[in-house]
Length: 156
Image (cartoon, rainbow, N blue to C red; front, top):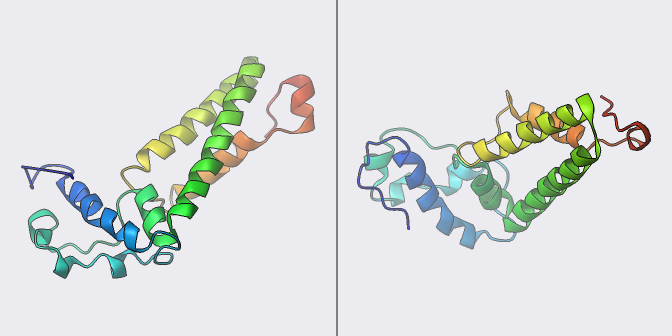
């Protein structure tokens, strides 16, 4: 259980939302509630400390991409999402170790960008201004054409 003595401190609202959202996942474990339905499921009127932590704000999302996916699409979807991302990262690390020069540097930069996005996703959800770049970088990281195996170069 998340305990926060300072309800006015930075992050107290996020902690509150996460704490109140976690039990909802049990109720919708397999299929979730449906895409973009967090606002309908997260009922502020039923939560005693809502005004203390959130005030008059309306909560549209879980402020955590992984919690958002688990609640709205189900835990199996979250597991598939994790497996997909970590397979690409694992393969990207293996590929980078086999490369050299600029190709290796580029591969490590892509790895850093993807992992950096995944870390920040703990504190926010995907948004239109950033999400497409993540998927482009993830695709570039997963890319390995036949020519790469021979030359060790990353083709973009």
